[in-house]
Amino acid sequence: MSITWTRRRIAFRRFWASFRTQRAGVIGLAILLLAVLLAVIAPLFIDEGVTNVVSGTGEKLAPPSWDDPLGTDESGRSVLLMIWWGSRTSLLIGFLAALLSMVIGTVLGIAAGHFRGWIGAIVMRITDWFLVLPSLVTALVLAAILGGSTVTIIAAIGVTSWPSTARLIRAQTLAVEARPYIERSQALGGGHWHITTRHVLPNVAPLLLASTTLEVASAIVTESTLAFLGVSANKTSWGTMLRGSYDWGAATSGAWWYILVPGLCIVIVVMAFTLCGRALETVLNPRLRRAS
Amino acid sequence: MTIAPPAADAIAEEPARRGLLRYAVSKVGGALLSIAMVIVATFFAFRLLPGDPVRALAQGRNMTPEQLDLERRRLGLDKSLPEQFLEFVGQTVRFDLGTSYEYKRPVLDLIGERIGSTLLLTGTALVMAVSLGIWQGARAGWKPGSRFDKFSTGVSLVLWSVPTFWLGLLLLMVFAAGIGPIPGIFPTRGIESVDAPDGFGYVLDVAKHMVLPCLTMVAVVYAQYLLVMRSSVLDEVGQDYVTTARAKGLKDDEIRRRHAVPNALLPTVTLVFMRIGFVVGGAVTVEAIFSWPGLGQLFYEAIRVPDFTLMQGTFLLITVSVIVMNTLADVIYHVLDPRVRSA
Image (cartoon, rainbow over all chains, first blue to last red; front, side, top):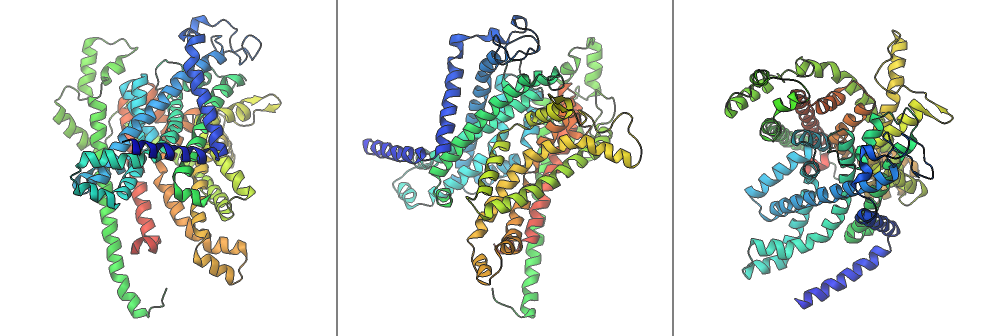
């Protein structure tokens, strides 16, 4: 066991050394850590009350000023504080939806790659079917039917976004299982569970990390789109704020801060995740490393 | 690459054509299976998941228990599940998508009225996005690492991170409502003015209404076409035939235009159609923002009300057409690209 861990520690150090050379990836990682940190420590400074309609202290739709650095919304709530509190919902949904999508995608992908024959064929058939469905439209329908609580939004995004992961993991599983040491393991009596969890999973894990990072980015965009199109709980997120700005005609009444700020937050966080994920991909995927 | 005598060529042609036919049949069979799965999944999703459609309908309306019962019977919800299922399948196969609760009219009629404007908007945006994406992607991929390449990749990365609806909101704010010194030039909503003139004036009026929605869709969709085209051109750059063309003394521009791009085009165009579902999602969002009276807006309204029959009907139509497009792209790709056929 200790040999394995030493080897892994060395591998991680080598990985970190090459990740550090990816400037964009490091910047993305820094922004990302900052955003997560801010979201986590938010309850130390503010509470759910900042999103309460009646507790708005400022004027309605007031432009940025000393009191409200990023202006106020239609009920006089501070946009800055709402953004801060809303980041918790946006990031939480983004992470959990990506996690759900990864778990489904990994389990089905490894299953399809490991069990050839009819099990694999059926799993691939289902995957291809989900891949063809227009994911946003399907997620909208699911969220509308289930009612838009945080859990159902996570489920709707997770259930519609796993197929590409499953395909990726399946391809990787096939590549790993073609190696001789799998045959050796089988000859020594390794069962399905042993081979998939001890040999395949550790080998696909690095790729999984890169694709999870990219998945979080797209989950955050999907969450905000679902919220904007009106299938979301009353929990404040960046998407619901933009919904509010649309409903209250911020675009036509010139309340630019109400539209610009939540949107920029989405773009910055999503871009940070994307940069980070692409850097991970470059480091972990030798084919890409050669190309760039 | 050997030059075969014509007779041998004709012999080789026959099995290839048969192989293609078999391929097409299997693809169409797969598509039919997918459509059947969509119908079954839709039925169960709309019946078994929590959220009784009748109770959802009654929300915010004063309805007596008798009225609720009547509504339940009208929707066929009083029958047993297998009966409901058979009835649903029978109706769907006969293109009967039920009656919208909100509009009190057949869903199919509503879809028929709206589909034209969706095709107009999506078609225009798609043509623009594909040509722009392919042109820019080809140039970027031909000289990877150049300034043009870096600029293109940067732009597509930013557009990739921007949610469609937010871009729409920004355009709405700047160009339709007007901000600061910029006056509003374009209309904020709809497809035509109330007092739209006839004839050519009408065409201009619609075009003016289409500028912003179209721009939003193009911006979001074209980024991924650019990236796909860039990577397929990148794959061609190192190929032997490019070196040969260069050795023949062709101009760089000519090699790109006449040799590399046609080869890279095929996988790109197929991917464009494979990912049509993404475009459909964008259309829903854009139509919702700009109140474009199309299928996407109909779907959006159905979700807002919520009008489950309408939602179900539009969902079925959208999904089935995406499946059909995918299958078409698959088969056409097979016809056009001999490299896939031999594999």
